[in-house]
Image 1 (cartoon, rainbow, N blue to C red):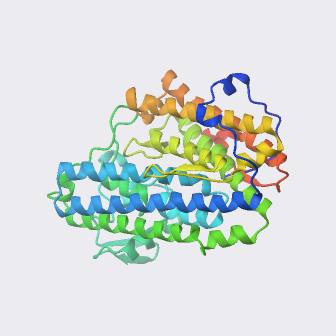
Image 2: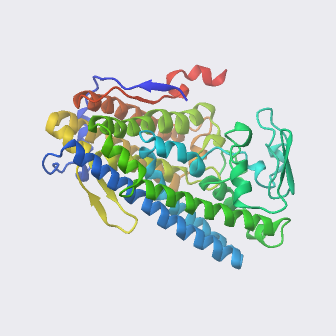
Image 3: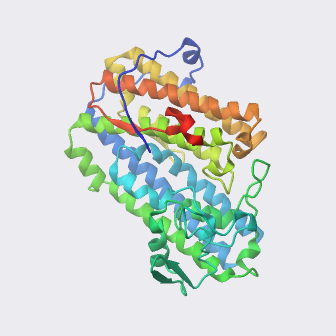
Length: 426
């Protein structure tokens, strides 16, 4: 991805946005908070978010184990619900990714996408058998007992965690995704063959009973859910007291840590969510650019990304069990420096959340996110564009926060889809 430097902007929040602020955003911040206190609470937020990911990941593993012990339509539906529940806290952690190198290096193990599903399993004939970019495009790990990779032959007679991890992003091809949330999603839902028409993946539970390679498919699903839990345990440890991320935040200058917090918000707002996850798909009108493409859960993951940014700004996170974790925040610091800017940032985030609330309502009541992407769907396209516009606007306010707090210059993710969309079609 391109990288873009945050600089001071001159974007004032329109009065109309301020008027749309929700009551939850209007409460006055309780007193001043020192920079170190903000960073300590930021680490508490990270620990709590990933603890919720781990808890829901374990619940997903349990649901998968129960399904595989006695496959049924009801069991598959329960495993799917557990996957959607597990995505909810994870989506909120993504604002922690870009400012923390430990998270960014780890993220590809759990959230890599899009994936070439033919690497993992049988696919529809319309998928094709080869790709100029990926020699493993249709390698079918589940249906194969060996796999040729360059001059090497990999033994797949027994599926193991080590074998699947070794093939993840094999050949330095990012679409060779063998583990993580989206590999599990594909194994639970199967391909979404509906294009921009209604419907998600429709994998039958018999894929785990009477279909060819049913036992190996079950082994694969069990392995990758176990690996997900293992990876989440590792990240919880990094955010916990004594963990690597806690130690780094405490050792480095406080302004550097605050800048990293804002880099995480800015990168997710602009390059990642507005650009790569939304604008690219809208430009191409391509449902393959939908993030949770097998389950049609994209609207929830996108909204979760916004909730994570709100949590970091406000220092407030609602945990999976309903408890609310509150503490010193960026919002406190800005309120003590420039109250108008704090109000502006509140309004920007409120407007963004409102846009994604509307997007989610449309996805639940009118049409799924991939249908909204369809060429000629003016209302659906507009709902997605409204989210993009709100994210870009809040990035301008994040720039102003960086300047107001006199933080070090920092880089955030850019996106060709936003910065030079004509090149997308070349």
